[in-house]
Image (tube, rainbow, N blue to C red):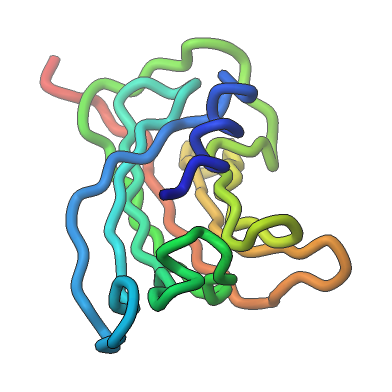
Length: 150
C-alpha cells in the first residue's frame, strides 16, 4: 500500500531502492496490519560493493494499512562491504543515498553518506526529518575500505 515511496524512487533515480528482508510483529491490531519492525537492504547507488541494512518500525492498524499513519522516527543501520568497492562516480559528503516517506506528507527517513578520507572509511548516517521539526534520533555505521579477494 506504500505507493508514495515507489513514486519518489522513480522520480529520484540516484537514490537506492530498498528490498524487504523480513519483519516481526510488535503490536497486535484488531483491524489492519499489526505494528511491526521491518528489515530492509539497499545497495549504495554510487558505491559498488556496499550494502546497507535498515531496521525500523512500521505503524499498523487501519491508518497504517491505508498508508496514512506516521511511522516513528527510529531506525538502526548497518552497512557492510559485500564485494570490491568501486566508486561509480564522484561522491559528495552528506549525499543522500536513500530516502523514504514515513508519513503521508511531512516526514521522511533518510540515509546520507560521508567519506572519512583520513581513515579511508565510508560513514552512513540514518535520521528522520520533518518539514517543521526533525528528530535528533539517529544511527551511524562505518565501513573501512579494504582490499577484496584480489
